[in-house]
Image (cartoon, rainbow, N blue to C red; front, side):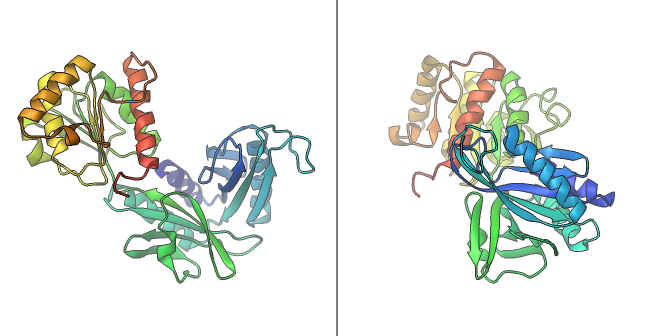
Length: 344
């Protein structure tokens, strides 16, 4: 999402209008669900996707028309074959798409976008809210945090807490409708180990809107140049993790270090935190040794084998290479993020 906002900001600073195209609802089988976005300029798509295919092509052409007409719009595309609104797709569903015209002369829009970009370094949840406007007129866009209003352009809705949704959701307030989606999540993925798996995993997670912090004791490996997609890199001895890292109940822990000893130290630390997900790499034999050492420290079987502990880490896709292992870990983190916590 940061990349999307940056593209919008760049266009508006160059006095180029754009349309923010967002899937705000879907039913049946569709390529992408609510929250999928792309930014379209006068010449075509600048960033993102709403699923590709004929529906995206038509949406892109619609957005270019709306830029010329300086207005917003809502459209539904039917992906059912042989229906009156058939567009030539066979997925079997319907997508509701909102086209939000963003005027470079609207100072308020620029301030919302700039504020949103700046919030990506904060440890706070933040939501992007769009009013589903149809026709000409100013586009209402805002940022809402857990504590309330952060920035808004246009008329501010009364019930801001209704926008604090776990995923992209349409919300009605009186005669107005809005679409709210998490923009910045307070959580981080702490990757312990800066080796080959981490090099593959971190840029993938960044593209999936996970914020990564990489920890290792090797100065040559744990540096910003090696991990440009990481939020931060931390250099330190594994025995000193508790003094260098603070993990909350929103965070994820990925243990992919170079040795059994480092894996054990990172795992022991993670189990003493409220992290919502803990994943430990290794063969079943190696993990058996680590579990025995953890029990010797006083951790119970219930804690070691609890729902938040994933060992071996990653989805079972028979991954072997660092890149494949990165994909399997990323898949499991997506599933963990989309699932309620055990206590919820």
